[in-house]
Length: 97
Image 1 (tube, helix red, strand yellow):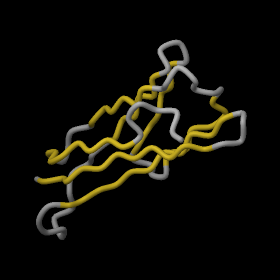
Image 2 (cartoon, helix red, strand yellow):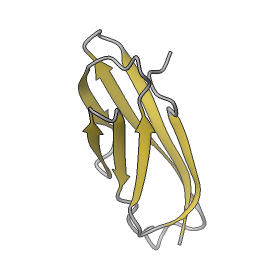
Image 3 (cartoon, one colour):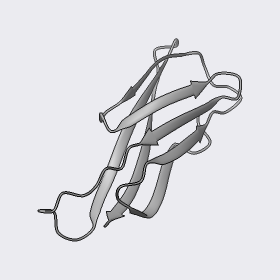
């Protein structure tokens, strides 16, 4: 059972080269967070405990010239609580030039 209103966010088609901010909204029963772990160096996190909002910034760099066509991405962020439980949050998108 996720502690987030929106544990999976699909940004649809996005243009590469422009950073994207995504906000995950915590539910009223959100336990105390002990760790937030993004699985990619291209994502940064900022948690507002008062608002129960987790802001993820995906740097969304340019697509390398050798990559042809659209590029599907999936970014994972693990949120660990003082209860020992972990929620997995995901951001998906299709990047184009």
